[in-house]
Each structure stands twice: as C-alpha cells, then as structure tokens.
Amino acid sequence: MIALIGSNSFKPNTNKPLNCGFLGSSSLLKNRGLKIMESNNQEFEYMMLGRLIQDVNYFCGAGNGHIKHLWAGNASEQITEIFKIYNSLNTKPKWLTFRKLKKHCKRLAMYKPR
Image (cartoon, rainbow, N blue to C red):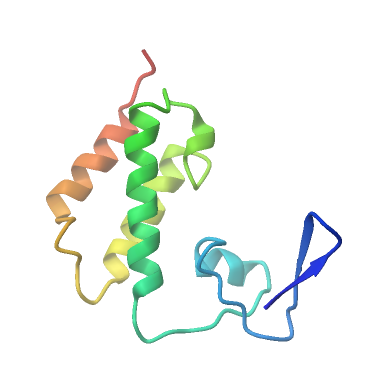
C-alpha cells in the first residue's frame, strides 16, 4: 500500500506488503527494506521483461541512445536484469526465445549513437 502525502509525494507504508508492479524489480525494492507481496504466478516478471526489452528497442531506435530511456540506468545493468528475469521464469515466453534475447542484449551492448 502506498500512502499519499501532499499533492506530489508518495511514502511507502513498510508495515504492509507492497504490490510493486509499477515500481520496478522486487529484488531492488527488497534491498531498500520494503516488503513485497509474493506471488506464485510470474505475471510481474513477464511484464517487467517486456518492459526491459521495449526499453532496449526504444534506446537503440528513436531514443537515440539516451541513457534515461533504460530502466536500469545503464546498459550493463539493463542486460543483467533482463537475463536475471528470463532465467528465473519457469515457463519461457513464446515471444522471446533465448536467441532473440541475446540479439537484443548484443544490440544494446554494442550500440553507438549516430
């Protein structure tokens, strides 16, 4: 649960589990001391993986290589997070084979702005 404090700021209520679907990786939030609502299905991981791949596509395309378009803040951490999530999935997504995943990550790692 997130409590609204004023008009623009949010303060997490750390006494209750937090559904962090829009905030980012659950491991990142756990490292910050927030309690995360655990789920048996991996819906969040699938959505996050899709988000990370879309960031790569935008970064290498219309984003013109601006680092602000990567969720992780830099290419190496983005690639690490993509592989971490992909490897954690019990059932791999049909839309993203391991070969395609490596292609996206290689494209990101080797990107040179025009």
